[in-house]
Image (cartoon, rainbow, N blue to C red; front, side, top):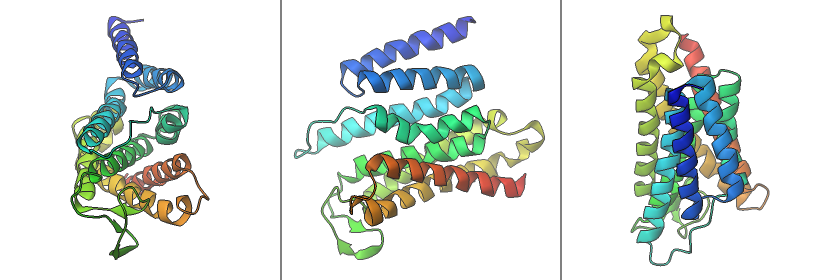
Length: 236
C-alpha cells in the first residue's frame, strides 16, 4: 500500500470516528461508508473520491446548519445504513462498472436534494407544491419547494459540476477532453433533474406511503445518473 493510500485511509478512519462521536452516522452507516469510500479511492483514484467526499461534507454541514438555525427543529436524526445505501448505491455501482457519468450525475442529485431539503427549511415563506405552484404546504412536506431551497439545490449541483470540470481528465477518455464543459453542464442539470424527480416521487408515492424516503432517494439518483449518461453519450 502506497503512502498516499495509507494517509487517505487513516484520515477517513479518523473522520469516521468524528462522525460517530457527533452522532451524524451510526456505526453501520460508518462501516459501509468507510468501505465504499476507500474502494472508490483504490479503484478510481483521488479525484473520484473527492467528489463523494464533498457530498458527505456539504451534506453534513447543511444538515447541522439548517437544524441549528431552526428553533423548532427536532434533534438531528443519525444517518443509518439505509440512508447511505439509498444515496450512494448508484454512485458506487457507477464506480464498479466504470460509468463516470452515472457516478457524477447520481452524486449531483444526492447533494442537490440534501441541500435543498435542509436549507430550504430555513425559508421565511411557506413552500409550494412542485406540481401545483399556487398551493402552499407546511414546511417539511414531501414535494414542497421554496426559492431558498431551489437556490441551495443549484449550489449543490454547481459543486459537483465544478468537480467534473476541473477533474475532467479523471472522468473523460483522453480523446474527449474537449467535452469538459459539456460534462460539467450535464452534471449540473442532472443534479437539478434528480431533485425535481425526488420531489415529484415524494408527492405521488411517499406521501401515500407507497415508497419510503430511501427508495425515493435511490430512484432519483438512479434517474439523474442515467440522465447525465445518456446525454453525454450523444456527444461521445
